[in-house]
Length: 150
Image 1 (cartoon, helix red, strand yellow):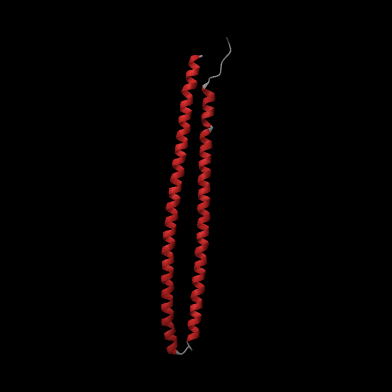
Image 2: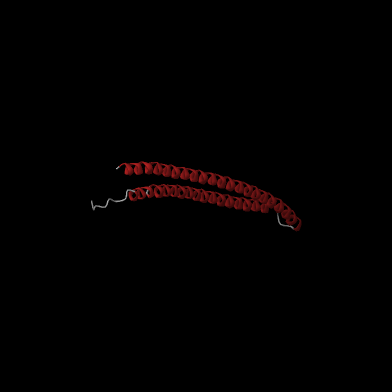
């Protein structure tokens, strides 16, 4: 009767620690994947914007060249050219402002969607953690009652 039986609570604490890090790791991985997807979307979007800006520049330069070709470069023609260039430049600025507004709206939409995804992931993580804790709490009284009976 000198044998010392190990405390049954020790294995219970060892098993309770294992599910939580696994869930946290899974949720962290989901968040990381979501962040990577958002990064890819941002890069694609940035590339699209760069392409549009390059196209606008090229279109603007083409317009200037076609306008230059129309005028023989006398003083009166240069003044007229100045007015036409002003109008064209104003049009380009309006286009850039419109694109800027669209970009801001799209960024806002992407940010809102990303925020919603993170909130959903957090909610699922919280639910999984609560479920794991409930399972652990339900299993602990059974083990304690088994100990008291023996």
